[in-house]
Length: 311
Image 1 (cartoon, helix red, strand yellow):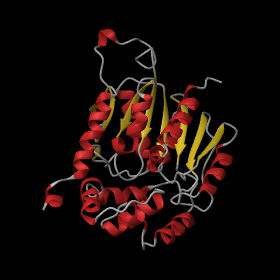
Image 2 (cartoon, one colour):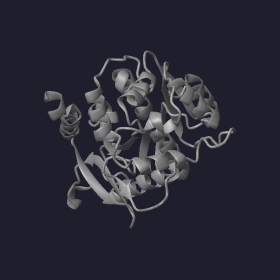
Image 3 (spheres, helix red, strand yellow):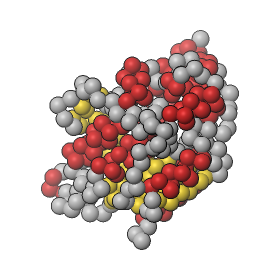
């Protein structure tokens, strides 16, 4: 009876929101065009009279955008990074379209559309230069933002994100997960399917009862399921056996867990070569697909050093 009445996912979600509030962020929404609204956590808006006329709207800090992956929206994936980085950066954590409270009436579903929406969000809030960090699906979006706006995006971090994937990589992932279709893994509907995802995504496999996993699915995976399936099918990257990846103008840091079973570590090495001379790679030991959660201290140190290196 107790298990059916208490939502541990809702309780933890409340903790996450309090944590971001304690870091100086607050929830906000902005209409980026006539069809699309982006919800995000960001610095509290300042009265116009106190805003510096600098390119970032605040002369004291650089701006940083943290882009979440497929699954739980931003606050679930970046809490430890926000707590660590907020004293040094103006941190923005958007919900991608159809995640959290971000929504659109547009029929567009590609990662290019997601990148455009986040870029417009930053323009609307008055930030013209920023660095981007994207994990997993968010790495696809971060890559596209850097490609589309080299004059705006200063540095790029791609974490655990096979933007160089091929159709065969998807098929091999389906086999590793022991599922019939990729959406059974990325959009689990049952406790068993969610366990398959956790088995590949994290190293420490703590047993969780079905009621907890079902609560997780209900609160974080069920909403906008149809549209999220369309997002998976709408990816432009990953559709061809020869990846269409071009080097970026910006400095790029690739971060990977050495035991990632979603995107294998060989993909990280190949991606570094594809992105050219401006790219570097950091592999974090004892981490799988979410090193920002499993090895947060190491991840944060690597991230901070890269973002603050002026060389």
